[in-house]
Length: 327
Image 1: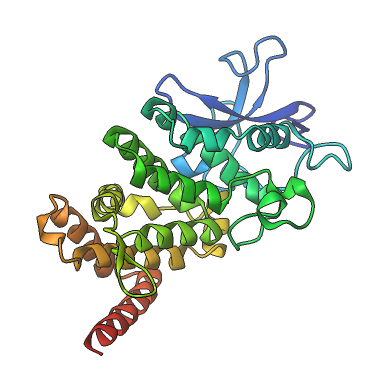
Image 2: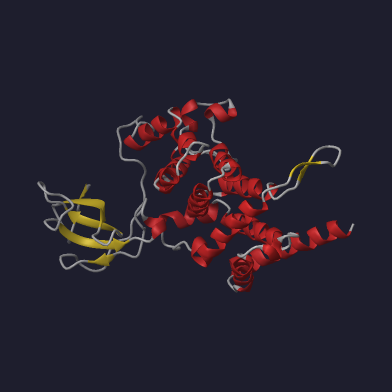
């Protein structure tokens, strides 16, 4: 909350909050909250913003609409940091929740061998939350963030999602006999993929790709047949999400972090994974062949500058792969 300095809402305390509507959509409001029943129709709403999926965690900077009691033009927002006492930036309710989840192995329980599909399906928000906490702790782009996984630095730096958590999720997919659990994990991983940043997304995609197999030992003998079926199902889930998987509103708060954290690199790695599946020796046997091919075709046909750069990188990697196979 903050006191409005002038014009609309002058002399009033204006509150920024998110409300879940009857449709289950998330809307943000700048309002004079009712002291008894805040967040209801008793509030005096000045401005509102209907959130996209990628804006539900933080309000959009622009794109606000003026309510009946507001005055044009609507404002633009600028983040100023965490609202807390000095020195308490890493002791907010969010940080305490993240610390509890990591210290009590909640992620390992949710994504481990003994998990039930209903547990996985209801855990997407937890995984997104812990992924977002990487930014709150200043985690680097390089996979796991401090603490127990790296053996260095302040242990609190590890109270967020780690590359090892995602590797565990994929290991569960490839070892679980219950296809329903694997399907839910695929949906969870693909759902959080755009917001992971390159530090988490790249190791995940590479882990998936490496499991195509067959895996061989130092003598060239196969040690496991690989997991083509699981990889192709993951790729099908990505393909079914289609273009909307990478759609981030340029005005949203998550757009900047997505662009700064290697989203082009991630898209290229995903495209390369899809190509590996399409060119696999068993590709024509899978039911999802046309769906995956359609995704690759659609990605390659886009004409925006980002996709042109992506296409050049992808075609370069394909030429390199062909050259290696010829040699």
